[in-house]
Image (cartoon, rainbow, N blue to C red; front, side, top):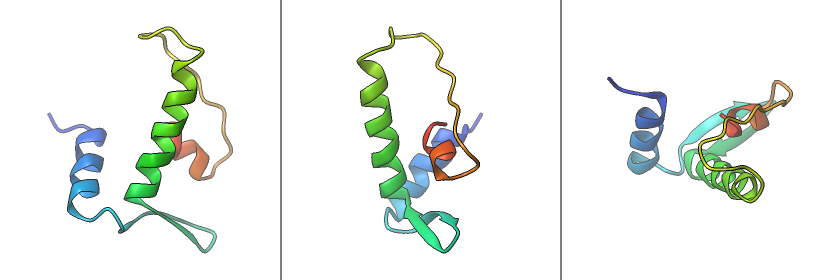
Length: 68
């Protein structure tokens, strides 16, 4: 079964500069989205025990997608 992460990683490898998100005239590339998600993951890893679930409260904006 193909997951959303599988599809994202495939697009990231194929064309990292391609826009992954377009919002209010701004674009975030697959590379930029991946880097933002990695930064969030690094911050959370310092305060959350591995395997714990974390709720994400974010406005209907790119931050919501980064938290996914």
